[in-house]
Image (cartoon, rainbow, N blue to C red; front, side, top):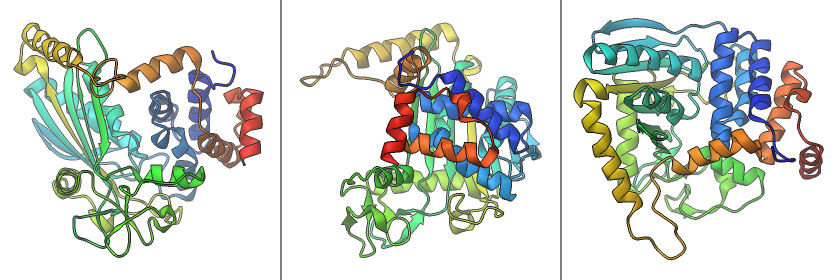
Length: 366
Protein backbone atom coordinates (compact mmCIF):
# COMPACT_ATOMS: atom_id res chain seq x y z
CA UNK A 1 0.00 0.00 0.00
CA UNK A 2 1.16 3.54 -0.73
CA UNK A 3 2.79 5.24 2.26
CA UNK A 4 0.41 8.22 2.22
CA UNK A 5 -2.87 6.39 1.60
CA UNK A 6 -5.61 5.08 3.89
CA UNK A 7 -6.39 1.37 3.60
CA UNK A 8 -9.83 0.40 2.36
CA UNK A 9 -10.49 -1.95 5.26
CA UNK A 10 -9.41 0.69 7.77
CA UNK A 11 -11.73 3.26 6.25
CA UNK A 12 -14.59 0.75 6.20
CA UNK A 13 -14.00 -0.28 9.82
CA UNK A 14 -13.79 3.32 11.08
CA UNK A 15 -17.02 4.24 9.29
CA UNK A 16 -18.82 1.17 10.56
CA UNK A 17 -17.75 1.83 14.16
CA UNK A 18 -18.93 5.45 13.96
CA UNK A 19 -22.34 4.35 12.71
CA UNK A 20 -22.68 1.64 15.34
CA UNK A 21 -21.74 4.17 18.02
CA UNK A 22 -24.84 6.25 17.17
CA UNK A 23 -27.20 3.29 17.20
CA UNK A 24 -27.19 1.56 13.82
CA UNK A 25 -27.37 -2.22 13.91
CA UNK A 26 -24.13 -3.98 12.95
CA UNK A 27 -25.72 -5.15 9.68
CA UNK A 28 -26.95 -1.71 8.65
CA UNK A 29 -23.73 -0.03 9.79
CA UNK A 30 -21.76 -2.50 7.67
CA UNK A 31 -23.98 -1.88 4.63
CA UNK A 32 -23.67 1.90 4.88
CA UNK A 33 -19.94 1.82 5.61
CA UNK A 34 -19.30 -0.42 2.62
CA UNK A 35 -21.27 1.92 0.35
CA UNK A 36 -19.34 5.00 1.52
CA UNK A 37 -15.89 3.38 1.49
CA UNK A 38 -16.48 1.83 -1.93
CA UNK A 39 -17.52 5.20 -3.33
CA UNK A 40 -14.28 6.73 -2.05
CA UNK A 41 -12.30 3.84 -3.52
CA UNK A 42 -13.88 4.56 -6.89
CA UNK A 43 -12.64 8.15 -6.64
CA UNK A 44 -16.06 9.79 -6.12
CA UNK A 45 -15.04 11.68 -3.00
CA UNK A 46 -18.09 13.97 -2.92
CA UNK A 47 -20.35 11.00 -2.14
CA UNK A 48 -18.13 8.78 0.04
CA UNK A 49 -17.12 9.13 3.67
CA UNK A 50 -17.17 12.90 3.36
CA UNK A 51 -20.91 12.47 4.03
CA UNK A 52 -20.37 10.59 7.30
CA UNK A 53 -20.16 13.56 9.68
CA UNK A 54 -23.38 15.02 8.27
CA UNK A 55 -25.16 11.69 8.56
CA UNK A 56 -23.98 11.32 12.16
CA UNK A 57 -25.28 14.79 12.97
CA UNK A 58 -28.74 13.87 11.67
CA UNK A 59 -28.70 10.51 13.45
CA UNK A 60 -27.66 12.08 16.75
CA UNK A 61 -30.27 14.82 16.34
CA UNK A 62 -33.10 12.43 15.48
CA UNK A 63 -33.81 13.67 11.96
CA UNK A 64 -32.53 10.32 10.73
CA UNK A 65 -33.62 7.33 12.81
CA UNK A 66 -30.81 4.91 13.61
CA UNK A 67 -33.12 2.01 14.40
CA UNK A 68 -35.54 2.51 11.51
CA UNK A 69 -36.18 -0.42 9.18
CA UNK A 70 -37.81 0.17 5.77
CA UNK A 71 -41.21 -1.46 5.30
CA UNK A 72 -43.31 -2.29 2.25
CA UNK A 73 -46.49 -0.19 2.31
CA UNK A 74 -48.14 -1.74 -0.73
CA UNK A 75 -47.02 -4.02 -3.53
CA UNK A 76 -47.85 -6.14 -6.54
CA UNK A 77 -46.00 -8.92 -8.36
CA UNK A 78 -43.73 -6.45 -10.20
CA UNK A 79 -43.75 -3.37 -7.99
CA UNK A 80 -43.60 -2.12 -4.41
CA UNK A 81 -43.72 1.13 -2.46
CA UNK A 82 -41.33 1.18 0.51
CA UNK A 83 -41.40 3.64 3.41
CA UNK A 84 -37.92 4.09 4.86
CA UNK A 85 -39.24 5.76 8.03
CA UNK A 86 -36.31 8.24 7.97
CA UNK A 87 -33.63 5.57 7.89
CA UNK A 88 -30.34 6.49 6.25
CA UNK A 89 -30.74 6.61 2.48
CA UNK A 90 -28.30 3.75 2.01
CA UNK A 91 -30.37 1.54 4.31
CA UNK A 92 -33.53 2.44 2.40
CA UNK A 93 -32.04 2.01 -1.07
CA UNK A 94 -30.43 -1.33 -0.27
CA UNK A 95 -33.72 -2.61 1.12
CA UNK A 96 -35.58 -1.40 -1.97
CA UNK A 97 -32.97 -2.91 -4.28
CA UNK A 98 -33.22 -6.30 -2.60
CA UNK A 99 -36.99 -6.23 -2.95
CA UNK A 100 -36.71 -5.18 -6.60
CA UNK A 101 -34.23 -7.93 -7.42
CA UNK A 102 -36.39 -10.57 -5.78
CA UNK A 103 -39.44 -9.47 -7.74
CA UNK A 104 -37.48 -9.21 -11.00
CA UNK A 105 -36.35 -12.80 -10.59
CA UNK A 106 -39.99 -13.82 -10.35
CA UNK A 107 -41.54 -11.76 -13.15
CA UNK A 108 -38.61 -10.38 -15.19
CA UNK A 109 -38.81 -6.68 -14.35
CA UNK A 110 -39.70 -4.69 -11.23
CA UNK A 111 -40.13 -1.12 -9.99
CA UNK A 112 -39.71 -0.12 -6.35
CA UNK A 113 -40.45 3.37 -5.14
CA UNK A 114 -38.69 4.45 -1.94
CA UNK A 115 -40.04 7.36 0.08
CA UNK A 116 -39.18 9.09 3.34
CA UNK A 117 -35.49 8.20 3.34
CA UNK A 118 -32.31 10.04 4.16
CA UNK A 119 -29.88 11.34 1.55
CA UNK A 120 -29.14 8.34 -0.69
CA UNK A 121 -25.46 9.00 -1.49
CA UNK A 122 -24.05 7.50 -4.71
CA UNK A 123 -26.97 6.10 -6.72
CA UNK A 124 -24.68 4.06 -8.93
CA UNK A 125 -23.56 1.94 -5.99
CA UNK A 126 -26.96 0.24 -5.82
CA UNK A 127 -27.19 -0.21 -9.57
CA UNK A 128 -23.78 -1.91 -9.61
CA UNK A 129 -24.90 -4.41 -6.96
CA UNK A 130 -27.76 -5.53 -9.20
CA UNK A 131 -25.48 -5.73 -12.24
CA UNK A 132 -23.09 -8.00 -10.34
CA UNK A 133 -26.05 -10.32 -9.98
CA UNK A 134 -26.85 -10.36 -13.69
CA UNK A 135 -29.46 -7.61 -13.74
CA UNK A 136 -29.83 -4.28 -15.49
CA UNK A 137 -30.75 -1.55 -13.03
CA UNK A 138 -31.76 2.11 -13.13
CA UNK A 139 -31.81 4.32 -10.04
CA UNK A 140 -33.29 7.80 -9.76
CA UNK A 141 -33.52 10.14 -6.79
CA UNK A 142 -34.85 13.56 -5.90
CA UNK A 143 -33.63 16.37 -3.68
CA UNK A 144 -34.49 19.85 -2.48
CA UNK A 145 -34.37 22.23 -5.49
CA UNK A 146 -30.91 23.52 -6.31
CA UNK A 147 -30.99 23.43 -10.14
CA UNK A 148 -32.39 26.10 -12.43
CA UNK A 149 -34.57 25.31 -15.42
CA UNK A 150 -33.78 26.93 -18.77
CA UNK A 151 -34.87 30.56 -18.41
CA UNK A 152 -35.47 30.52 -14.64
CA UNK A 153 -33.74 32.78 -12.12
CA UNK A 154 -34.18 30.35 -9.23
CA UNK A 155 -33.87 26.65 -8.57
CA UNK A 156 -36.73 24.50 -9.84
CA UNK A 157 -35.58 20.90 -9.30
CA UNK A 158 -32.97 19.09 -7.25
CA UNK A 159 -29.69 17.88 -8.69
CA UNK A 160 -31.64 14.66 -9.09
CA UNK A 161 -29.35 11.66 -9.66
CA UNK A 162 -29.75 9.15 -12.48
CA UNK A 163 -27.71 5.96 -12.56
CA UNK A 164 -27.71 2.71 -14.47
CA UNK A 165 -25.60 -0.43 -14.53
CA UNK A 166 -25.32 -3.25 -17.09
CA UNK A 167 -23.88 -6.68 -16.24
CA UNK A 168 -20.77 -7.70 -18.21
CA UNK A 169 -19.99 -11.42 -17.97
CA UNK A 170 -16.22 -11.12 -18.21
CA UNK A 171 -15.68 -7.74 -16.60
CA UNK A 172 -16.97 -4.97 -14.40
CA UNK A 173 -20.48 -3.59 -15.00
CA UNK A 174 -21.01 -0.70 -17.34
CA UNK A 175 -21.88 2.01 -14.82
CA UNK A 176 -23.18 5.54 -15.25
CA UNK A 177 -23.94 7.75 -12.26
CA UNK A 178 -24.70 11.39 -12.93
CA UNK A 179 -26.40 14.39 -11.42
CA UNK A 180 -28.89 16.01 -13.77
CA UNK A 181 -27.29 19.31 -12.85
CA UNK A 182 -24.25 20.49 -14.77
CA UNK A 183 -22.29 19.39 -11.69
CA UNK A 184 -23.15 17.92 -8.29
CA UNK A 185 -23.61 20.57 -5.60
CA UNK A 186 -20.98 18.82 -3.51
CA UNK A 187 -18.38 19.75 -6.10
CA UNK A 188 -19.18 23.43 -5.65
CA UNK A 189 -18.72 23.08 -1.88
CA UNK A 190 -15.52 21.10 -2.38
CA UNK A 191 -14.09 23.74 -4.72
CA UNK A 192 -14.92 26.47 -2.21
CA UNK A 193 -13.33 24.54 0.65
CA UNK A 194 -10.18 24.03 -1.41
CA UNK A 195 -10.11 27.67 -2.54
CA UNK A 196 -10.51 26.72 -6.20
CA UNK A 197 -12.36 28.70 -8.86
CA UNK A 198 -15.33 27.17 -10.66
CA UNK A 199 -16.22 27.19 -14.39
CA UNK A 200 -18.91 29.54 -15.68
CA UNK A 201 -20.98 26.50 -16.72
CA UNK A 202 -21.75 25.34 -13.16
CA UNK A 203 -23.99 28.05 -11.67
CA UNK A 204 -26.84 30.38 -12.62
CA UNK A 205 -26.83 33.65 -10.71
CA UNK A 206 -29.84 35.56 -9.33
CA UNK A 207 -30.15 37.41 -12.65
CA UNK A 208 -30.58 34.15 -14.57
CA UNK A 209 -27.12 34.37 -16.11
CA UNK A 210 -24.03 32.18 -15.57
CA UNK A 211 -21.77 33.11 -12.64
CA UNK A 212 -18.37 31.94 -11.38
CA UNK A 213 -19.02 33.10 -7.80
CA UNK A 214 -19.41 29.84 -5.90
CA UNK A 215 -20.13 31.67 -2.64
CA UNK A 216 -23.59 32.56 -4.01
CA UNK A 217 -24.63 28.89 -3.95
CA UNK A 218 -27.17 27.82 -2.77
CA UNK A 219 -28.80 30.93 -1.25
CA UNK A 220 -28.55 33.22 -4.29
CA UNK A 221 -27.40 30.99 -7.13
CA UNK A 222 -28.66 27.69 -8.55
CA UNK A 223 -26.85 24.92 -10.34
CA UNK A 224 -27.16 24.97 -14.10
CA UNK A 225 -29.01 21.99 -15.60
CA UNK A 226 -26.85 19.44 -17.38
CA UNK A 227 -26.86 20.14 -21.14
CA UNK A 228 -29.59 22.76 -20.79
CA UNK A 229 -33.09 21.53 -21.58
CA UNK A 230 -31.88 17.91 -21.78
CA UNK A 231 -30.71 17.82 -18.18
CA UNK A 232 -33.86 19.64 -17.11
CA UNK A 233 -35.96 16.96 -18.80
CA UNK A 234 -34.05 14.12 -17.13
CA UNK A 235 -34.26 15.86 -13.75
CA UNK A 236 -38.04 16.05 -14.16
CA UNK A 237 -38.11 12.34 -15.06
CA UNK A 238 -36.24 11.56 -11.82
CA UNK A 239 -38.69 13.66 -9.81
CA UNK A 240 -41.67 11.80 -11.25
CA UNK A 241 -40.26 8.29 -10.78
CA UNK A 242 -38.78 9.00 -7.34
CA UNK A 243 -41.39 11.21 -5.70
CA UNK A 244 -44.60 11.67 -7.67
CA UNK A 245 -45.26 8.00 -8.45
CA UNK A 246 -44.56 6.55 -4.98
CA UNK A 247 -46.22 9.46 -3.14
CA UNK A 248 -43.09 10.95 -1.60
CA UNK A 249 -42.18 14.56 -0.89
CA UNK A 250 -41.35 16.58 -3.98
CA UNK A 251 -39.25 19.65 -4.76
CA UNK A 252 -39.41 22.13 -1.86
CA UNK A 253 -41.11 19.58 0.42
CA UNK A 254 -37.78 17.74 0.59
CA UNK A 255 -35.52 18.91 3.38
CA UNK A 256 -31.86 19.88 3.27
CA UNK A 257 -29.90 17.21 5.09
CA UNK A 258 -26.94 19.60 5.26
CA UNK A 259 -28.52 22.90 6.35
CA UNK A 260 -31.67 21.90 8.26
CA UNK A 261 -31.59 21.43 12.00
CA UNK A 262 -30.46 17.92 13.00
CA UNK A 263 -33.88 16.90 14.29
CA UNK A 264 -35.67 17.48 10.98
CA UNK A 265 -36.08 14.57 8.53
CA UNK A 266 -35.05 15.23 4.93
CA UNK A 267 -37.74 13.09 3.24
CA UNK A 268 -35.63 12.02 0.27
CA UNK A 269 -37.00 9.57 -2.28
CA UNK A 270 -35.69 7.19 -4.91
CA UNK A 271 -36.80 4.72 -7.54
CA UNK A 272 -35.29 1.33 -8.30
CA UNK A 273 -36.03 -0.34 -11.64
CA UNK A 274 -34.54 -3.79 -12.17
CA UNK A 275 -34.53 -6.05 -15.24
CA UNK A 276 -33.55 -9.71 -14.99
CA UNK A 277 -31.56 -10.14 -18.19
CA UNK A 278 -31.93 -13.93 -18.18
CA UNK A 279 -35.72 -13.64 -18.14
CA UNK A 280 -35.80 -11.55 -21.32
CA UNK A 281 -32.63 -12.34 -23.28
CA UNK A 282 -30.83 -15.68 -22.95
CA UNK A 283 -27.37 -14.98 -21.49
CA UNK A 284 -25.70 -16.93 -24.30
CA UNK A 285 -27.17 -14.32 -26.67
CA UNK A 286 -27.11 -11.15 -24.57
CA UNK A 287 -23.51 -11.26 -23.40
CA UNK A 288 -21.93 -11.91 -26.85
CA UNK A 289 -23.99 -9.06 -28.30
CA UNK A 290 -22.94 -6.79 -25.45
CA UNK A 291 -19.31 -7.83 -25.89
CA UNK A 292 -19.50 -6.94 -29.57
CA UNK A 293 -20.77 -3.48 -28.69
CA UNK A 294 -18.06 -3.01 -26.05
CA UNK A 295 -15.33 -4.10 -28.48
CA UNK A 296 -16.64 -1.74 -31.15
CA UNK A 297 -16.55 1.19 -28.76
CA UNK A 298 -13.06 0.31 -27.52
CA UNK A 299 -11.85 0.04 -31.12
CA UNK A 300 -13.17 3.46 -32.15
CA UNK A 301 -10.50 5.82 -33.56
CA UNK A 302 -9.26 8.17 -30.85
CA UNK A 303 -8.13 11.74 -30.63
CA UNK A 304 -4.46 12.54 -30.15
CA UNK A 305 -3.27 11.53 -26.71
CA UNK A 306 -6.23 9.24 -26.01
CA UNK A 307 -5.39 5.55 -25.66
CA UNK A 308 -8.93 4.26 -26.19
CA UNK A 309 -12.56 5.25 -25.78
CA UNK A 310 -13.82 4.22 -22.34
CA UNK A 311 -17.21 2.91 -21.33
CA UNK A 312 -19.04 4.53 -18.41
CA UNK A 313 -17.56 3.25 -15.18
CA UNK A 314 -14.24 1.95 -16.51
CA UNK A 315 -12.23 4.74 -14.92
CA UNK A 316 -14.00 4.29 -11.58
CA UNK A 317 -13.49 0.51 -11.53
CA UNK A 318 -9.80 1.04 -12.26
CA UNK A 319 -9.65 3.47 -9.33
CA UNK A 320 -11.39 0.91 -7.13
CA UNK A 321 -8.98 -1.91 -7.89
CA UNK A 322 -5.99 0.38 -7.43
CA UNK A 323 -7.40 1.55 -4.09
CA UNK A 324 -7.80 -2.02 -2.83
CA UNK A 325 -4.14 -2.66 -3.64
CA UNK A 326 -2.52 0.67 -2.83
CA UNK A 327 -4.96 2.40 -0.48
CA UNK A 328 -7.14 5.48 -0.95
CA UNK A 329 -5.60 8.94 -1.27
CA UNK A 330 -8.33 10.90 0.51
CA UNK A 331 -8.52 14.65 -0.19
CA UNK A 332 -7.96 17.02 2.70
CA UNK A 333 -11.64 18.01 2.89
CA UNK A 334 -12.61 14.33 3.33
CA UNK A 335 -10.00 13.83 6.06
CA UNK A 336 -11.35 16.91 7.84
CA UNK A 337 -14.84 15.39 7.82
CA UNK A 338 -13.49 12.11 9.19
CA UNK A 339 -11.91 14.05 12.05
CA UNK A 340 -15.33 15.55 12.75
CA UNK A 341 -16.87 12.08 12.73
CA UNK A 342 -14.28 10.91 15.26
CA UNK A 343 -15.07 13.86 17.52
CA UNK A 344 -18.83 13.26 17.21
CA UNK A 345 -18.64 9.60 18.16
CA UNK A 346 -15.47 9.12 20.19
CA UNK A 347 -14.21 6.53 17.71
CA UNK A 348 -10.43 6.78 17.51
CA UNK A 349 -8.87 8.06 14.33
CA UNK A 350 -6.29 5.37 15.02
CA UNK A 351 -8.74 2.98 13.38
CA UNK A 352 -7.88 4.69 10.09
CA UNK A 353 -4.14 4.26 10.61
CA UNK A 354 -3.64 7.59 8.82
CA UNK A 355 0.01 7.92 7.76
CA UNK A 356 1.93 10.72 9.49
CA UNK A 357 2.60 12.43 6.16
CA UNK A 358 -1.14 12.71 5.55
CA UNK A 359 -1.79 13.96 9.07
CA UNK A 360 0.85 16.69 8.65
CA UNK A 361 -0.58 17.73 5.29
CA UNK A 362 -4.10 17.93 6.70
CA UNK A 363 -3.13 19.92 9.77
CA UNK A 364 -1.07 22.36 7.69
CA UNK A 365 -3.89 22.97 5.21
CA UNK A 366 -6.39 23.35 8.06
